[in-house]
Image: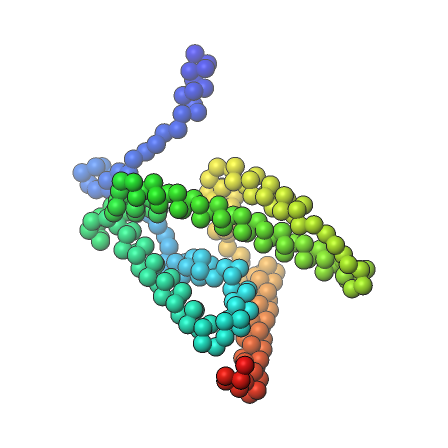
Length: 251
């Protein structure tokens, strides 16, 4: 009996999307539910824009200037415009595939797999899954290597600061790679990590105006703005200086 109760407690209850209407008797919850019965989304154009910016602008931006310098003034901007078009086109496809059928009341597709299943189906769903998970594995490996190299560089910089540049300060990136990978594995085992209650409280908590925390955050934002403006000004000045001595087709 106890075993049966334990199995019953561990059993997950999966609720299918429900209709929100007067006939279904849950019209009083319409303010909190979407038309498919899920919790109403509260995003705005600003939050959506923020998510898009953080998704598109990643660590690759740090090496963008070097990449453009290697490609040159013709191939560099051309490559940027090409990938900008690819990004815009794929974003448009995702927006078009968000609903299946009617663009206003059709079924929502919340994942890539849902969109492929609704629009293509068949073996293409499996093919999409293989490509998607292969991409995730590749990205995870790439970020693990990049993070370990970055941590190794930080350690080497500290070594140079304490022991001088004459010291070779040799070190291996393997320990950092193991630490980063172990941390990722640990956090990936936490179910619904993005919905942990205390994370929501921390994210939703408002800092009172003119409080110490509010002033510190504003000062930090101001410092970041000043650094960004200085970096932009330095980049523009460097470009102007380079153009003054630039001679096209001079080799």
